[in-house]
Length: 305
Image (cartoon, rainbow, N blue to C red; front, side, top):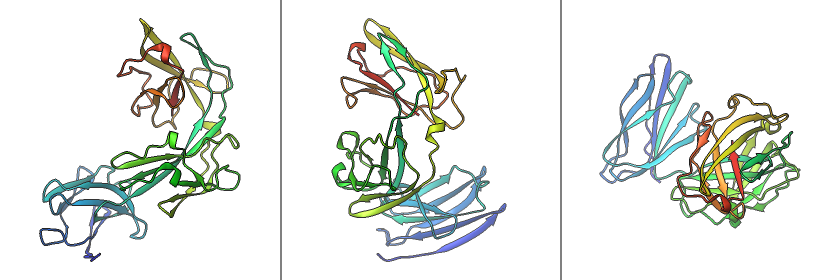
């Protein structure tokens, strides 16, 4: 690929801005070009002259060595406006670059599982303490094409993780999104908590490596205790309060480390999803299913933090 680099830097209010583009020549005869750069209401803003319908990726860096893809999208016209909503206060310096084409980005995290009890009719029954009993690794891929099937993506964790060159679980993975694929490992019960250390995902024959810090999962277990409202055999809503996992005390609200919560309603087996909510804010305490769910078809409710 032909590269057309250019670098400018401007010091405004103690914030160093760097703009760098690396691209092939655009179809209208010139490389993409940053213009009209400014700090607006505390946020970095710039415009880009680019060929309409060109796919591009914006990446950021604080040191010109380590780059993080922020977004891949397609230009809708020749002049587009980009705004970094994070503000400039958190960065002593920030560099931005644009590349033509989509740039795949990768993420890795854990799902931790705990059995918080069962329903007797429509009343939950929980025995405390509630502890974690298993985990799975989750590998997410954004802005790629031709996502491989789950059985062709492999998980290798640190020693004792229970996963060594282990294929993703097809039943709990999604490889059919337009701009994202989601790969989940098999569920591991020994150990019950995903361990810190080096994790390697083999994706399309290349290794993507993650250094995972201690997830502190055991000390961050909270029980969203549900109450269901059923009328005429149809589930109307699910509401909940947050309980201490050790003794069942009402916490009075979500703990500070929570960033979201998701409600899932399962059918005759755990893979048969009757309803998935969006990612809800931690302060949310109820949700109404957007589709009809017969309570007699419900085998379980999961609350994901």
